[in-house]
Image (cartoon, rainbow, N blue to C red; front, side, top):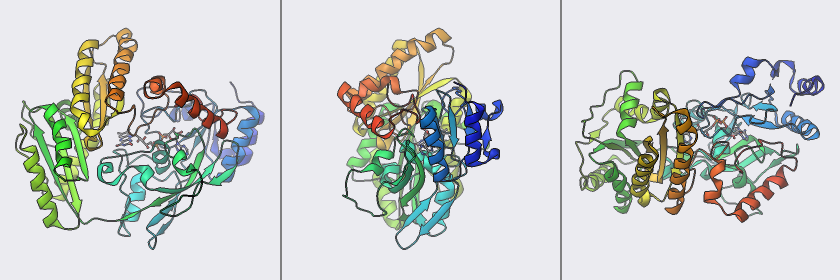
Length: 464
Ligand SMILES: Cc1cc2nc3c(=O)[nH]c(=O)nc-3n(C[C@H](O)[C@H](O)[C@H](O)COP(=O)(O)OP(=O)(O)OC[C@H]3O[C@@H](n4cnc5c(N)ncnc54)[C@H](O)[C@@H]3O)c2cc1C
């Protein structure tokens, strides 16, 4: 498909000539995200700055049946922002303003192109707390978080993006602009279109304003790194901690290779790990009363000491805490720097984690691949990185797909599902039949049709 000069002229009329790009370099730049090595450039990159402009663009796209792909910061790991059918790549980067912070009602109204960490820091300056902290928060956009229903390390105590979204301004694929709900903490008024939009991966509408609920900031936390001699025991300890009555504010699992690669990847970070250690749990508790946190930390120690562990490392200073979090948050990039890989985002009820890990390893043996697992264990969310290593392209492209299918079948058999936080996007859609019946998938297709009768918005995503 080529966009003719008449259509480009119309787009330039809407957003201004300097915000329409057809050169190869720009198209390639906006044609990839962080998903493996995929590149799907749009035919044209357009950078609007208002909901009204987006509405005009979508009306043209409908008239000429041109695909439109909303593009955030392109940190996505399921290929949601890839222009797999070409068309218009709609960059949201000019929607970069925090519109208001309401200290009376503990709410923030923001545009979607604000970097998540910038938003967290802006509300923090007012003593408020936006807890959702994806490891990519230094670069991803809050709009991308809404579209993917992003989580993060603190989700185990504070929940994921959906738990904070109160109301959204959305441009529908037809070019109509709506608010989905109200700026209230409760809402039983009609169908919940706000929550339908959250996690819809830019396939039902384009989010142009976001109202988020905020919390008050906690003052204290305790962070500890627990080395386990056996990886499966680290997984068993996860549910044991909750059963002991503790709700940590973070509970992260890291297999040995994940830590080793992260330590190699980051300069100047030193954590001593004995050769026999197979995995670590990074555990945080937070609150306002240090005495209570120490009691919680002691309870956690009592639980983990029932397993085979080495000395627990407590982060005493803010710098030590930052270093441990940096290590954890660098794992995804460290894996990427080490080998070609495919990342799956499995999630199960947390008590099933040991079975999931064991099953992944035996599927790996069957198909001859190595996997490096880490993730938000407190949520039962395990990122499975399948490493290409020395596998041939033939094995990588055929056998591994069968192995991934078995991993997802195992996940679903454990009452889990395909993705905890990264979304389905382009790369996982061929596995949707494992998680959903035909009836369920048809229902989703019909919902898509109601919103987007011409199928122009982010086509080729989510639905197989
Ligand atoms: C190193 C690393 C660590 C990560 N850690 C985490 C983590 O801990 N937790 C987690 O949940 N994710 C994590 N991710 C994945 C990724 O950062 C999230 O999915 C994030 O929410 C994507 O935001 P983005 O702005 O980059 O969106 P993009 O990748 O640009 O787009 C993602 C999807 O959102 C849609 N979209 C973007 N903006 C809009 C909009 N305004 N309206 C409608 N649709 C829109 C796109 O069409 C696409 O389908 C990580 C990624 C990396 C690279």
